[in-house]
Structures are given as structure tokens and as C-alpha cells.
Amino acid sequence: MEKIWLKEYPPGVPAEIDAREFSSLKDILEKSCQRFGELPAYSNMGVTLRYRDIDRLSRDFAAFLHGLGLGKGDRVALMMPNILQYPVALFGVLRAGMVVVNVNPLYTPRELEHQLSDSGAAAIVIVENFAHTLQDVLDKTPVKTVVMTRLGDLFPWPKRLLVNFAVKHIKKLVPAWAIPGAISFDSALKAGAGQALRDVSLAHDDLAFLQYTGGTTGVAKGAMLSHGNLVGNLQQTSAWLSPFSKPAEETIITALPLYHIFSLTANCLTFMKVGGHNVLITNPRDLSGLVKELGKLRFTVITGVNTLFNALLHAPGFDRLDFGALKFSLGGGMAVQRAVAEHWKQLTGAPLIEAYGLTETSPAVCINPLDLADYNGSIGLPIPSTELSIRDDENREKGIGQDQVGEICVRGPQVMRGYWNRPDETAKVLTEDGFLRTGDIGYMDERGYTRIVDRKKDLILVSGFNVYPNEIEDVVALHPGVLEVAAVGVPDEKSGEAVKIVVVKKDPALTAEALIAHCRQHLTGYKVPRRVEFRKELPKTNVGKILRRMLRDTETSGRPGANG
Image: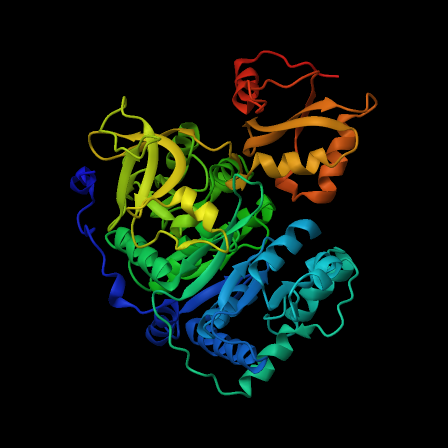
């Protein structure tokens, strides 16, 4: 497809980036630490680590990993919310030449066991709040080393003592756990400080992340993101930012979890590259606490999902904050709603810019111009060095315009190498000419802006997190009282979409409450169904495939289902 979008680029944004400027993420980090040493890099709960601190601590953690006998390419899992230990461990793993496996701290034992086993993780860094989950499955995984940390472990004395005491004994947020041989984060850093760090040579082809995402099989798959993929995406996003931001001058609010690809790249990595200051929010659901934190800062950028922006707009005190320094806000992970974008700009004076990406693309694919005057309903323009093609089911390219709807396909340096140990799944999404089939259906207008009109996959998007119906159905079907089940997404004011299950009973006494309680035992909170409907039968094709689309259409048309 002709790059008609280039004429819409803001002045100063190049058509192409130089992906070879940096050899690896390690190269970027080390140069940023050298260049911005005394500047604040990451803050949490009022405590700040400067770039020189990140350099020293991540070096020590990398040396500790080498001291364990781990080497280049070994996988290390990180299971933490947004705390200071995350960037230290993240960059330590990368500097050691190893592969980061990001893990959602809210995973159930079943989900955690799958990801650790599938990735072959040799070690894990985990906050003790979630140690009980790891304890349940540790002996079923290849993990040999457990590094345990507490929320305040990188805070100065006595704040460290007070925070850790409050979390464990006052708020009682640490369930009892026992993992023999677990090493404290402090001990790991001290051990590494006394060891030399081997210099590991890294290149674009070397693996940096196994970033897990759902799939049509209902089993999470690890997208193989190389150093080249991430370097490419950082070059692309920083090029897009360059006319609107200044190196060493930006303060970005990082409320989305860093284990999510959007926050990982857009916040943690991109602003590290340009010497920005990431303010890490550990619990964004505490809106009063978040508003209080924002009131202390002259922040210039904030990223989030539509539901977060909407919640902030309705949070007491948010409308009284000083937004004088705010340049722009970036929304991703789910569609930004017009009402939210317009209200946001009216209140803050800064635009809420919609972006689009996938785990498989590191993630950025399209971003709207950061000086966009008004909400336009599109996912933006393909960023530099990105090719976008709208294709039909036979892989033939469609034309331009609203009547040329097809699957959005992407090619560029940010596109993953494939799925970890899943050549069959990789073949389904990567075309012979190197394009990634996104599963999203849309079209490109005459100016090069792309609009999504539907999702090819039956993906449910809950507050920016992917929920795959097959996984929900597999769990529900384990209940002895269920004969058949289908899971679909339904509109939800708080989360954009919520999970609904439609069930045919095997046991007439089965209740919705019993099914939801069953799901809570096996699924992370955002995956648990919010609604349950019972029917005598499910709509199916002539070969017996359940027609989820008919169930969704019934929901959105307002026709009542057969409950009870």
C-alpha cells in the first residue's frame, strides 16, 4: 500500500528511523545512564532513583544472575506491580543477556504455572504479596531460584520499615507463604555488588522478552520480542515524540502496570531512552491516592486506557489539579471514547491521543499526531518505518476508503519473530511477505488514518486487557453442572467490556453464583464473568460450532435472554 499517510505527519517526524543506531536495549540503557546520570529516572511513593542509581543497581542484579550460573538467553520471570524494584530487575536481566518474562501478579496458580512452565523460566523475582500463589505451583515449574522482595525494599530507612510493616501487619496484604531457599532482593543486590559483571554481547536478533498474550486456542502464548524489535519501536516512538517533547525534561505518570506491553514500552523504555522521569503508581485503582499524587507533580505526559481517564474525570479533586505542564495524554490498550476524549481536553486543556498496537508489535503501530486538535475516531497514522496493508481473507490488498474494509496487516522492525515454541500459531499470523495479520478489521481513509470497525477474533477487551473466550469457556466447562458454554464480551461502563457467559445446564440446580465462585478460583479478576445467562441451547452452525456473534448481537440489540 502506498504510504499516503506520510503527508499527514507532523513537521519534524521522519518517514524512516535508523534502527541500527543502537545494538540492543542494553546499549540504550547504558548510554542513557551515562548521559542523564544525575536526573531522576523512576519514582515511587515519593522515593526517587536517579539514572546513576539504576545503572549501579541493575549492574549488581545482572552480576547476581551470572553468579547463579545463568547465561545468555535464559529466561527470568518478573512478577511485580509498579515499584522501584521492577526497573532495577528488568534492566538487570537485560544487561545479563537474559530474557524477561513479564508475569501478571494477579494470576491464579493455574495461569502462573502455565506461563512459568511454557517459558522455561529459570528464576523469578516476585513481591511477597503474591508468594502464596507461587508456592502452590513452584514444584511443577522449572524455576530454580526465587528472589523475594517487599514493596518498600528500595526505600530509605525508616520509610522502608514503615511501609513494609504497614503492608504486612496493618493492611494485611501478605498472605502466609513458605518457599525454602528464597533469596531476598537485598541479598541478591549485595551478592552482585561483590562480583564482576561479564560483558554480554547483544545484537538485534537476540531475544529480549517473552511477552505473553492470549490466543485462539485459549492458551497464553509468548510473543518473541527481540532487542531489534524493541530498539526499532523505541526509535519509532521517540521520533513521533520528538517535535513535542524535550530530552531530560519530561515527567510521565505511569499508572498502567509495567508488565503490560503498552506501559512497558511507552513509559518505562521510551522515556528512559530520552532521559524522562517515570512516576510509578503502584495501585491506580486507589483514585483518591492517585489524584493526591498527581497534585504533587508538574507532570507533562500521562498514559492510560479509556477506563482510567474516565475514572479520573469523575474522581473528586481531579478537576482542581494544575494541568499547566501537561503536553498530551496517550490512550491505548482499548478504544478511546469520544465523550471521554472531549471531556478530558475540556478539563485539562491537553489532547487525549489515541494510539494502536499489539503485544506482537512491541506494541506501537499507529499513533495520532500529538498536536491533534480534536478527537477524530481513528487509531492514527502508521508510525515511521511501518507499513500498513488492508487485506482480505485471501491475503489480497484492498484499496483506500470506507468501502474497502479488511484485516489490518502490519510490517516493520517492531513485528515479533513469532510465538515461543508455537510454529503453528506463528504461521497463522505471519504472512510469507512478512506482514502480521492483526485480527482487527478496519479501513484506511484518503488521508492515511485507519479506523477499526470490528475484531476478527472473538477477543474481549476488559480495561485494555485481552480476554479470550476459549480460556473462559475451558474453565467454566470444568464445572460438573455445565453442559455447554459460550463466552462473549458485553458493553460495560467501567471496563469498556465485561465477560458474559451463556450456559446450558447439566445440573438443573446450578446457579450463577456457583459458576462465578468457580471462575474466581481459576481466573484472574478481570477475566471472571460479570454476567451469567442460562439457555436451553446455544446457537450453532450446521457443523456444530457455537455462534458467539449471534449471542453478542442478541445482547446489543436489547432482546432479553432466557435467564433462570
